[in-house]
Image 1 (tube, rainbow, N blue to C red):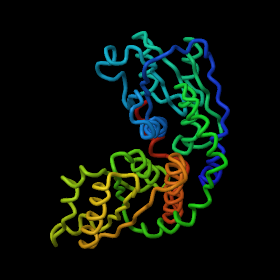
Image 2 (image 1 turned 120 degrees about the vertical axis):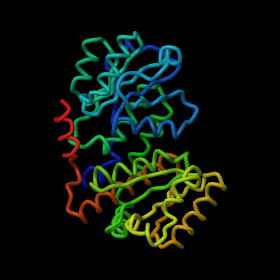
Image 3 (image 1 turned 60 degrees about the vertical axis):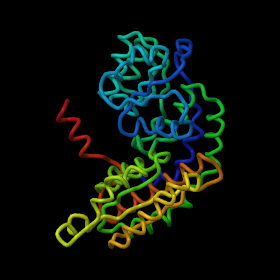
Length: 321
């Protein structure tokens, strides 16, 4: 895991090619089917371009009303392993309904499915890392499959502009602040993909509970759960709130963050503020996520958990197979 973080920027050098490219049909939109780490690139792409006609499906089957709404869309089945059963089901049903289908995977059943049915596909590099750590590969592949050449150029530049080691000390320090605490990550709606990434990195790398929510919605419900009195104080004694602060947020959202932080601190809760900053949108994103990686890694070191593998997920897959 440590090596995966340190070498992350090299993923943007991935020289991807679409196999069976002659079968790639023009489309007016995209439907991305993916679970776990395999849909995160789509979430970031929507964050980058909210107007992009991209629907992210995280379930078996197809989106409701898909035939009417998505008739001219490209259905992209994304599974890092190539064996995720929900994504295989998505791909099979999309093809049966005669939608245009493409595949992004490391190998497995999905690549075999693409070859058998003459579907365009991108094979991700095999470097022995977990899907959550392969976000650079996945994003480059998605940019290629959606024909976004400008985005590909921007992503290539990150290979030299990102320095993962720069956020290591801050991640180590934040992990120490979280000793004995359960993190709750708060962000604006525009940064929900980042907050979600922080959560799953704590879950999968740190092997600890973590939760997230967004402004302004949390001010209308969740925050009242922390208005503690003596009889409820022990229910939330171990929470630590992490605020993802972005200077590009609506000033009203920034004000809500500041006031919420003050109110939580007045009630005895520890908080941390993470500034989202960089020279470009994608540097902002990945500097933030690399900090999350380091924090989760040092949380894992602190508790003595196994940072790379996800044994509970593997156990679950065996039980349902």
